[in-house]
Image (cartoon, rainbow, N blue to C red; front, side):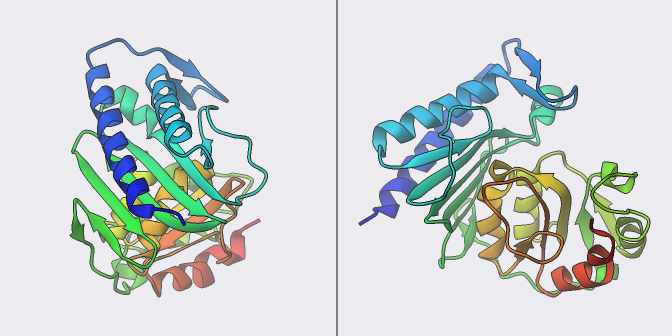
Amino acid sequence: MTNWTEIDECVRGWLKEAGDKIILSFQTALQITEKSNPNDLVTNIDQETERFFAEHIRQRFPGHRMMGEEGFGDKLEDLSGIVWVVDPIDGTTNFIHQKRNFMISIGIFENGESRLGYIYDVVLNELYFAAAGEGAYWNGEQLPRLKETAVERAIVGINSTWLTSNKLLDPAITLIPLVNDVRGTRSYGSAALEFAYVAAGRLDAYITMRLSPWDFAGGKIIVEEVGGKVTNLRGEPLNLLEKTPILAAKPGLHEKMIEKYLKRGFQ
């Protein structure tokens, strides 16, 4: 039988240890590499942090598998058994330019079902955490259940890039009308941070056109454990083995955003 308490204790210790190493890295020059384009960056600290988690997971839990952004995980074709999904630094551009507004994100799944989720703000030493059926927490304080918010009172997290012409949807009939109707928009440069802010009620919704599993694996369960909804832009469940558009939002608001704005323009 899986000892989830042991797993949780290990994750918390490893997050703190990894976070301390990241803070120490502020004093040294980063090795920065471009991946798919000049805006898709990776540093030696991203890689070292993912390697740290991969080595500890394999040593302590040899029967578990891991999916990671930087290539130190396993090649997965299914989600059977216990799978860790790790983003060592979510918000790498923020990490490079600001040394803040980046997160370590970990989601742990059992046969494809969310069991534990962690989003750790290294600089502020803030941990957002959820366990299936047990609610979500911010530094040990239970987060309240989310309440419905009207569209015109909503603060929505969205990258302005998606308001320009793109292949995934027509912003003229979807996102631009939405942006005109809501109270305001924000963009923080870290998907994990925006998931945490939805869960904590600092954002009412978060929309993005393309996230990988490691970007949303930790945040998904945290939002869901406070009553929020996390789906693709058609309202369908997410596939944890592929990139996907995502809407994470308060209950009620989620459905309104899909029906009134998103469904009609999604390709």
